[in-house]
Length: 203
Image (cartoon, rainbow, N blue to C red; front, side):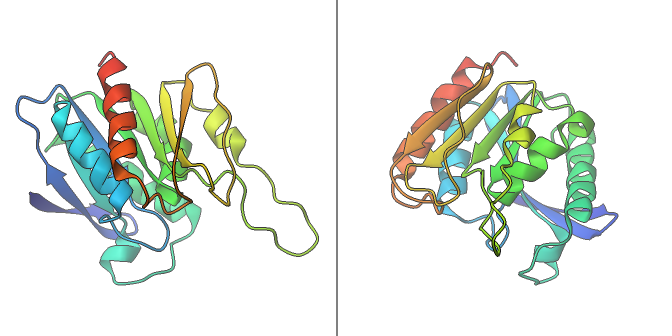
């Protein structure tokens, strides 16, 4: 595995590269809000993708590289992500069709920035459909972020996820697995879902 420092408008990010033999595509994934890239769901997805001949880049946002736990504002996250994907497309993952995604917050960033990254598909691990309730106001669904994605999208969601269960759509496949938002209970099921989905992509 190689680590690459990538300059972004928000500071340096870091990509951890897991190359596949004779890759036919690449998968770029971001971590969640308060955790790093070593979560069991990200590890399972990485192993499955490499097995399907997709090279993988696990991306640490600048706030994580700087040792902070609290995420940067959405605009900053999006700017950094776009810069990282552009760098990888021009360098380490050049000539490979790209699939983007991440877990929780990372999945949201990948969906929001799809017009800029122009990826072929999106992988969402534990998409946080409904934010936590604050005060008397009902939470506003983030389903529009998923609905805006017009390329194939896979959502792998714990059946007991406190943030809710996204519905399937025309190009959106939703796979329920055991566990909650942490997706720690059944990494084999996560790997199988990612493997099966990647095998169907025409990249």
